[in-house]
Length: 150
Image (cartoon, rainbow, N blue to C red; front, top):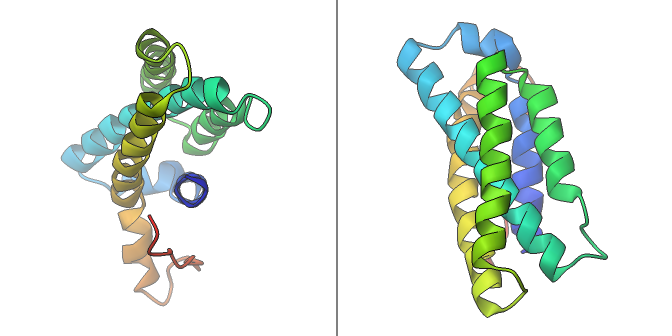
């Protein structure tokens, strides 16, 4: 789960490079998909926040909440989108709490499955960065190799 967590963190940090300027160059459909993906990612962060607090309270008490705050800070979504992201984070946290009040195999398996889903979201959200990497005048992107154990 550490490598998945690192991937999500790197992906969230990469999203910061896009910012509001990238959103202006997107089509309306791309922008709406991006907002849906951000809301879904916020929900996963909420679920992870609950499960990791239950399963690893000494190691990760507020890491996922902090990541959510950082994502919102870096993304700077419009007010309504920000409110939806926060709502979905909180809903994800509550739903995970309802389904996983204690740390057990089901909770860990759920967290792992949601991390895989979030990785796909981060991949889609960061795709414009990979595209910009192809152009000389685009931003410098550092790519971190992924291990095969995920």
